[in-house]
Image (cartoon, rainbow, N blue to C red; front, top):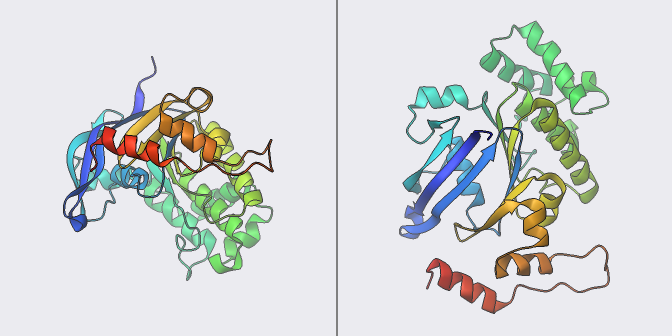
Length: 286
């Protein structure tokens, strides 16, 4: 049996800003090396909170009250800051949601890619520049020399997202957290980016935790899926099993609520209020 790269066990957290309201409720999930796991749910379900907890960037208003996050058998929540910093950006990397705000607008793309390579891999300036150029070619940027010299505002949203994907995979991380990386992109570019992430993931053998609110994206790129509601895991399993034979009424309702490309004239079906009522009762929300 393949050892888990990432194991989240009994993770619970509260928001002090909301008077101690639970935001994660005994969450558990695992991720194997080379696996793409979707972490899916509505806004406020807790998926980004889990991602931030793994990355060690939770806001001060969110407090972990129980559970573990183990990466390669090491507890991330109990690591001292120097050890955690040595892992982040090298063994664990992030593809952020918004390419517009995630790049330094005052520095050229080549310099920003080279910085990470020099810091995390100890490369010389020249070696980092050569590697950065190759990375841009790897993410299928047609004119990498021009992009190296460009500032972020001179690139399209899709190009900026390709740069961020290159940065995430630059140091061959074992785990990439992709935090809704296609949200700001149009549908055509979104499909290209999903194919690119999958291709890079397979080439590097990386485990990917893919945060999204879209079950359609999960169907395209993920091997397994964890579905959340109000900080609680509602259903999980292989993508095909969950989407074709869902066990929970909420999962079935979400699938029914999505657009059907085989029936373009069919209307959308909202999740029935009775399903939400049962969910709240099951979780213990008044």
